Structures are given as C-alpha cells and as structure tokens.
Length: 410
Ligand SMILES: [Zn+2]
Image 1 (cartoon, rainbow, N blue to C red):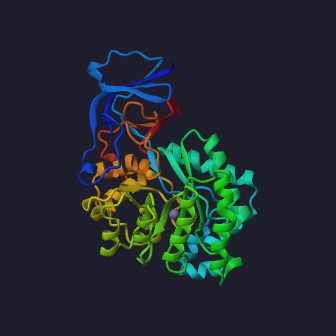
Image 2: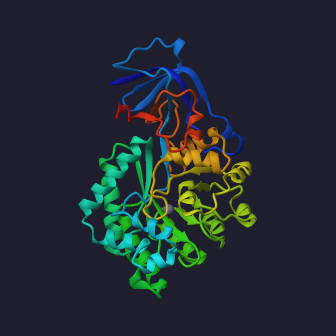
Image 3: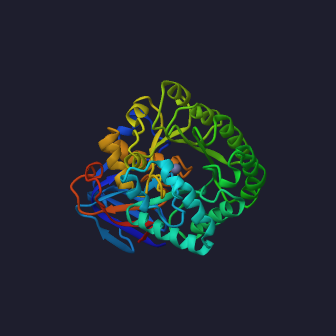
C-alpha cells in the first residue's frame, strides 16, 4: 500500500475526529488545529494524524513541512469554468462608460459567450476548460462544481455537459456537473420564454437525466430572466429526475426565489447580495446552504452577500468563486477568502471552513473538504508562512506551494 507521511507540519488545519456535518453559527469559529503535527496518507485516504512528537510512523515517501501549513483543498461549489474565449475587452468598454445593456447591444455580454460556445468545437472547449482547471488546482481548488448555461440550445447545452463529463473522467480532482440551461433566454426565444422553458423541461432535461450528465439543476431566478414560478417549475422537473436544485437568486433583486428554492429542498442558494428579512425567515431552519460569491461583488461593484448576518443567524454558509467570463473572471479561492474577511467581516476561521467543509457539503461531497480518518487525501501544503491567518489577509497572494490529490503529490 503506497504511503505518504507529512512531517513537522507547523499547523494542520480542519483536523476533525470524524468528518464533520455542515457547519453553522459558532461552529464556524472553531477551526480545529494541531501545531507541530504529522499526517499519514495511505493510498488515496487520510490514515492517521496527530502530534509530531508522538509519531513513530514510517512511509514510502516523506515530506518535511516545517514552517508550512497543511489544510484540506478548497471546495469551490459554484463555477462556470467551461466557456470559450473571454470578455476582457468589455472591461475597457465599461471603463469608458458603457453600461451592461450598451455592451450587450454592441454584441457583448452573456450572449457573446453563448455565440462562442455554440461555435467552438467540443475538443477546443475541453482544452480551454482544462487549462483553467489546472490553473485553479495550482491555487488550491481540489473539488469543483461546474455549470452549463452558455449553450442555451439542445446541442450546445449537451456539448457543455459532455465536456464536463470528460473533465470528471480526466481531471485529478472530483467534479460535479450542474445543468443550467435556465441561465438566460436565448435569442431564438426572445418574447417566447415559455417556449424555452418547455424546451428545457421536455427536450433537454430527459436526455440530460437519461445520460447521467448532471448532478444538479440550476436556474437564474431574477427580474428579466426567470420568475419565481418558472424557477419552481424547473426545479420540480429536475427533482422528478433526481437532480437537486442549486439556484442563482437575489443577485440584483429579492423576488421570493429564496423561499421557492428552500421549498424545493434546494441544496444551495447562491449570490444573495440582496437579502431581506423575508428571505431570512425563508432560509432559517432549513437545510439549504447559502453560498456567497465575493469575487463577483468585487468585479461588478455590487453589494457583498451579508455573510456575517447569515452566520450569526445560524444559517449554513459556504464561499465559492463563481468563476465566469462576465462577472467573475477569477477562480482564485484564496482571493475569495480574503474578500470574505476584508469585505464580509468573516474571521479567517469562518472563511476557511466556508471554503472547505461547507463548500464540500454545498456539492454533496462530504468525503472531502476536511482532515479526518478515511477522508480523501486532497490537501494543500502552503508556502512557508507564520500563521493560517495569512489566508484572510494577504489578498492577491498565492500561498499554496503544492497540492496532494488522492494521495499523490502534484
Ligand atoms: Zn454563477
């Protein structure tokens, strides 16, 4: 049995007696930490850990982690990492004073990504997406959710989902797929949203489910996109095919989508930049996880999700990147954590646990996201740093030296 021993770890983080359930409230402040620790990995699982002074183990390979921090890999539960091209030129248009609608009218915006995804060969889409995947792995993301939603027609949505399926097979890290045809109304259905919803429910969804192409179903519930009633219908259709909901909701307006998602037993509600007392009542006492996406707030200049309130109200909270070409062109979870500390007033402990333990739960991946016996051995070894608090403080830095995925150094 192949074994790997990490020795002299300055701080081993998120080390639990057994894999934790989703964390809430004050549990988020309690970051289990062992100073001067060891960690033993056998094959692809965590086999033992504890104080270095008690360690008498030997392994096939040993890595000295003096002055370094070891922690579970980041679990990014919300990304749109499969896309073609980029929209970097739109930033200068925006800075010249063009608003979202003007950029869209000039051929930009989400529909420009849709056009590029429709035109690109599947192989090329895969190659571009894998490049981004390896970039985020190098920054510590060791579990990832990826959405469709830039095809918006039968062939192109399936193309995206097939690319994600191939990424699942060829990627070293675990990936979950989300069917997000209800991301926007495609141009062919302008003025006929009902026709597009029928296309999603009656044409696309049966094939997606039959071929096992998705783990979750998602809807952009927002004024001008999909209403609360549309969201309920699409989530119900997904539920009948065993797809749990993950909903884009309350990004710009609070229209009742949180209640609809909770009623549909959605695994997560994501965005929540606009959040009312009605939304709070809706999600309180539910099992639905609230997901904040601070990179998107930074890029668009919109409010940050009220994460401080959510945690104080005992609501399960996770952090994710929302990596996408239009509103969050970064999958850097270290930046996500720093923004959560700087802008959302989270403690470093809360930000770390929201990005690991709770991120894993927000995509039904309880086997990863923490250090515990039997957990998948997906861990980060930091550069030499004095304290894990650097993760909430050194914004823009890459503190990840290297990663271990399924027990293998990468
Ligand atoms: Zn998103």
